[in-house]
Length: 178
Image (tube, rainbow, N blue to C red; front, top):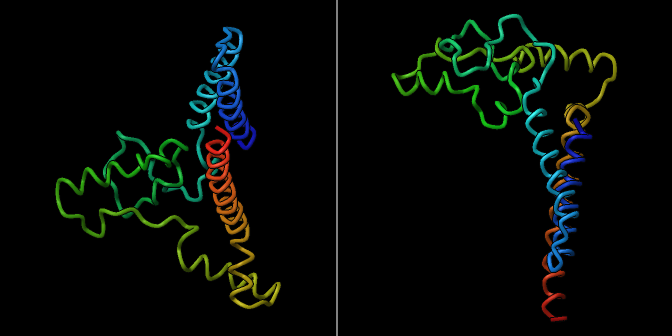
């Protein structure tokens, strides 16, 4: 998964950089290579978005994420656990619920149940289990359990700040040179 994303980023960057350098002398060989690279990127993206987000469902009563799925019910767990990447990015799994909400007012039994991983009883039992094994403060448990999300968020924020500022200074320098 990471390889595909890295390949797509490299393809986009390579195409942009090469086309900006060779735009004055549009060489057919370079355009052919980059068009194949771009097509490869879109094919990989199409394949990548059809894979399920989770291979193993957390419960047996997970609602299926499809446009033709039945009406939502409180007897089923949220279909968010059975979605593909495309459904997750576009929120297509919510269509049955939104369709029902357009027809009438939703009742409590019309809404899916929370997945087992989000139920407070399960989370609290897991917290107590971690507390028994490694007695730490609540803040420590929260930071350690969310450390990957925090690291990714900090890296992306820094990347946006650095690259965003670099482009501004590059444009200023380019205008001063010209």
